[in-house]
Length: 121
Image (tube, rainbow, N blue to C red; front, side, top):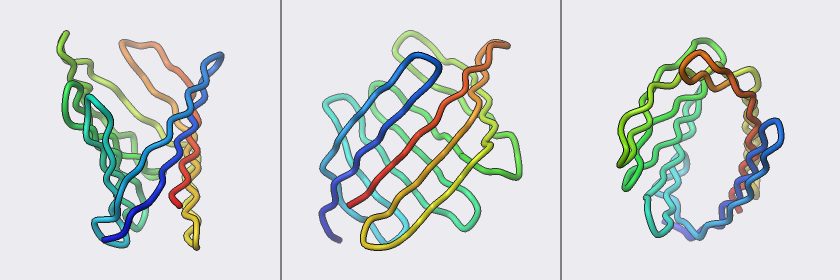
């Protein structure tokens, strides 16, 4: 297990969120980090990426080019069903792991295009 820094840039139509976390490796494919409300896990699979949040809000999101993934975003206010259609998934492993994801998030018939760039140092 080693310490890592995780930077996540998320961009939608007119929204940009940059987050930075101190985290650690569980193994060479799994990374954990947390904030004051949630514990997060990123799992690199052979053909997909899993992004899990557990705490005040809970969601298990799968990014996979081969299929549409359904998940539920659980909050203190109730559950929100979501659909994820991944259009780009790039994972470059080296000294720095760089992950680029483009996806369409469907909620109640509305679709929002998002991009995420995750760097694990």
